[in-house]
Length: 556
Image (cartoon, rainbow, N blue to C red; front, side, top):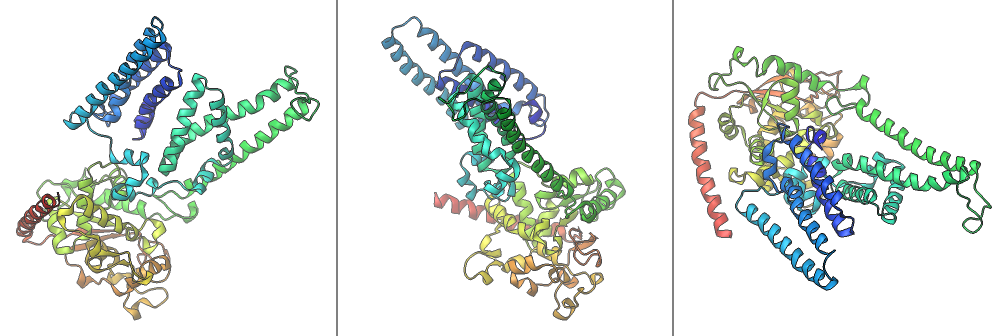
């Protein structure tokens, strides 16, 4: 748990798994004083070690997920007392004590937790973790639903990640139920919970992997044990149990060979899958290392030289407060890239818990230029990074992510007035669905579709005659089929007033550098009257917040 806690937020699962296992032990009759000692020792050591991790610290114990395993200690102690009483009481008296005792424990512990939650002393479980247990609530949580790793798992993903283990895991579950020892009860609990959670959220396949391996080992051990005994003469399988007169070393060797082949297929497919994924990581996508796109590496190099927070004193960022380091705005998917790979400050990153902040960034990107710069100035924004990805959605284009920027802004910062209906239409004939209206006047669209004079014409010679940015011709059929009317919304230099392009990556067509860029960075050019604009913006937002609060009060 300590090692997982230092690297991934899913440490909450392993920590709370202890409490679930303890409850299962009580229900299944496996509880013993020895288990209580083991539980308290393991939980105490794990808690002390995890508190030492800076990003977790003591505040973790303020949450329900952190307190539940500790509260289980009180439950186990009380249950142990009841168990001791049963040794000296009659069956009828003990039944009465059990009923009264369990009701008292449930009322006391449950009431305590409810009181702590209601008074704010203890924080509730986060939406992300509740959505793992109840996947349907993600429909109302765009911040969680927008991440592809949070989607439910498809059968193809299960096979692609576990290969032949898929057929052996059910056997492991069967043997764990058939032989409910302490070890097997733990394995069963671990296995069933990870199977459910990984099915609910595909990224939790990482948690299923160790439990799948353990369940497989349990199944293979039970399957091969009789053959091992028979091969060594310790067990004879006769006609009473099998059609063969007996099983010797030759039969056992054949069985071992079959199991070895199944596991060999799993190992081979795992190595192949890992090789394929490592050959084309998200930061350098492509079919192979020699055909990888290095656009992010180019962007990192530019940012380290021009927006590095360690060197900001040497740069002059007009319109911002003196001494303010450059702040890069991008969608939150790229925050960790920019911070760790380019030493540049961002407003949000992949580790951001503040949903309001993410909504603010979505608002900045969805507003038109004149309104967006006032909001950007309030957050000291100096640059904006967008990922048009050459119009190829599979390369992580912001075009596909735009709908989530809209939904998240509408959900978490409704006072800013971004509404999905103004930007996107999801009803009617397929040819009429997609982005519309205000979307094509948004900062994000303008910076992605900006057709700089030095970008030249399209390789096919069509864009100049049609007056269409070459970004959306040629190899962008995915984009054109998604939103057919994109060709009608070109963005020329005269259409962009407050942003200046300062970086453009080589793009998806190396033979035409810059024509199909994956990454573009723009510098914000604040006008002289920016402070006045900010004042007007604040006044408008104050009225909007008051109207929104009044509408909420009326609806309640």
